[in-house]
Image (cartoon, rainbow, N blue to C red):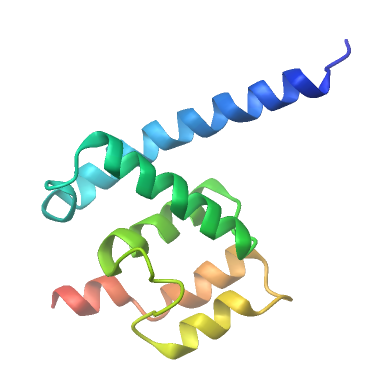
Length: 117
């Protein structure tokens, strides 16, 4: 079986759309108050932009991207540029950490739970 570049691109587009749908539902369920004023199109645009931003930091795994998205929704679209803790920016920019390692280190700050306490 031979898979051509065009077929791979279509598969990639399909997988991205599927991921956006899943993320959309999860974000609406987890953050109803933060997403209620955003129509579906706007939320999907935010998700797409956040996916692109996560990729810049080598964050590719589904769970890691979902965690990154949650931080974007909770702290704003510029979370990666102006995080609540300056050390988080340094973690994101560290080239020798994997995406999972970056997200694990950021998770240690427990940002969402601390802000809601």
